[in-house]
Image (cartoon, rainbow, N blue to C red; front, side):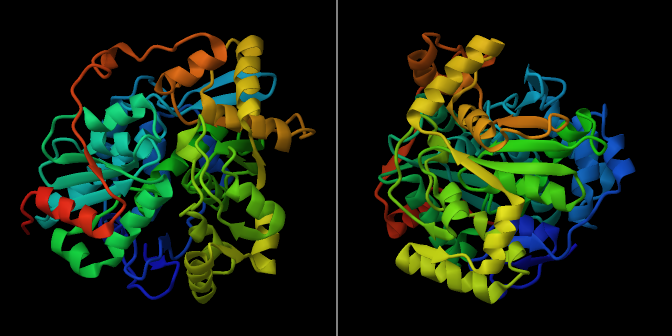
Length: 469
């Protein structure tokens, strides 16, 4: 399988090189040169099979000769063997035709674990084979950082640096990044927003001298391997509900557009998805884009769903490339306009495609509170704020949908990651799983840095272990 950049000026790479590269050298994002597809019988065969086995079937077409099926199977079994539920991503029914897909049974209680646990094993396998090392730099709005540090902590071939916006993540999210004592992991609180953190990561990747000097790699959803791993749970959930013979709609809380883009890819691979609903909070740039045809940045608002407090949805670039017929020149112009004017307009072709591919709705603060309370009252089920945005968006966008179509809301995090908000909403303070009893008392270790590329690069170079190979 070959991979091409959304901006059309980077070398074509294979899966191994894409895995280690993260961001393309022209500033773009990598996508496969073609989409593999599954026949209906193959999709039906996923029902009832272990998650790790389905992951091999879904992922293997994307890796080509880079990873054999046996090696990939060993990685998936290891990655998902430590999850707190045997089904890995179980479905819970909360209404006649509505289900919650619980993606929070991994070690850091967030959907990011599904991809990150596998990504770490893939990267370690490739680095060992090549006798190399990598310096991973990533940005997080809350969950990616903890998942990355947990997945790579103690790794002998990798140093990890995670940038998070100071004061804009929950205490639990922060402590999952700042309490691991391993010398190869570093949490950096940046004086700014998540968009600032994400911009710094992209700037470091685009500083090619620095990138080569520290052998930079990325684990944000700019890394194609992250998206690949997330495709699996769409197939697993849909097959469990009767696909391909039964149609399924998904409502996806999303900020960076990675999770819902994985659903879009699953649909291109043949999964009969009826609707993909973009669920947003008050930082509603994606629903506004769908409504107006203009992608226009505004100031980031702090909400109770901080992982969606974003105005630059990086993975939307992948969708622009695909929906435009892979027009790399057009994507470059749009990304330049975004950098210069903080906005760009969708062309007619992309606007029409987006209207056919997605529905969208956003939830305000009052909507989130009322949704949490209603689901608790009606289904005796506690959803955290991001998932509540997903439920609200499903209520708005899927009203009147054919009742034969199953509705699946992705639960992207465990309620215990947001205990203050949950206590405010319900009067109940959800407890962390017992295995995390020491999280809130363990000593923290992190740096606080200005939103300055030179300062952050200097910190990375000073603290990365000697690069060899």
